[in-house]
Image (cartoon, rainbow, N blue to C red):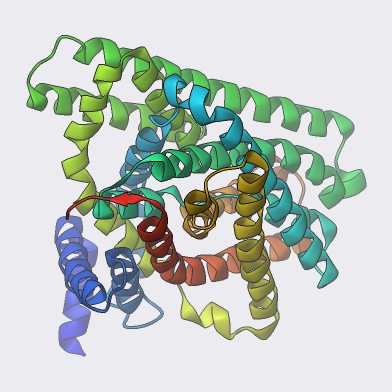
Length: 416
């Protein structure tokens, strides 16, 4: 016990030592997972769970804030990567199909999740918010699995484009829906002018996020245009990525939308900019590994032991999973997409994590929450967070193996 306490104190005092331990333990359990024919991502998450406060307590509770930079860098890299899939050349070929599939799955997931949660006794405003949150897909798991398998081809083009459009749509729709749902949440306590302000603020936030990303993508393209050395390009790219992500976080914008826009602008200004992503790619394995181990430390298996929350959580997980697959399948049928994509794409859309949790935290920090105090609303928001955590708990452990299965069946797999 004394040795464990000393280890916890060392982890708390030295973030670099903490990162080293997380990477090393994540690597070992990730290797064990691959020997059991599971994705390494699942091993990383299990490693984090085993070190979490709810299991062994090795990872100190208050350490997440000091390691938040890792999460922000990982999500920035992920968003930049999938944003680069919005190439106008590709979109001319499959853009209509992407729109149909994305709209189908968003509509079906939203109504399925919100409707069932409402039927099981959840208040309508919260059911609506969780319905739109359920449409989000965890992009990091998708990108990491694609890079691990070296998957390519039309399947990956569809997958990245849908994930990017899906998450961007989720953030935008959530921002607008919350402005209207706040009226249902607070009723007479909220003035009509406050709702209008909330809508206008949401639109402004979306616009500035996209504008910041467009500017960042343009600057990155211009500054690397005549550079030949990969080291120079790497330094410039990381510098701009860090600055852009930090500005988005500091200004309470969406780092996801910002980096999606940057990646899209980057790739459409010149096909030669693909080299920037190739130069960044070797950095992604340790960053992603650390990201998923840290995500695992935030999971708490004790949440699953609460019967009422567990029921709602399982309703959320089950309805979301079935609706995600059904929505993608229906969209593919309408678009007449080839069977290999139609039958397997839905399996890759199941993981959920950072985007969903970020939206829940966004509700808690919204200006209206500081102006109007209603304990029952605050209690329900905590329950919403726990329901999403239950989904993350299951989807991050079960989602990666299903994503791997879908990729192996539907995509062209390179040599590892």
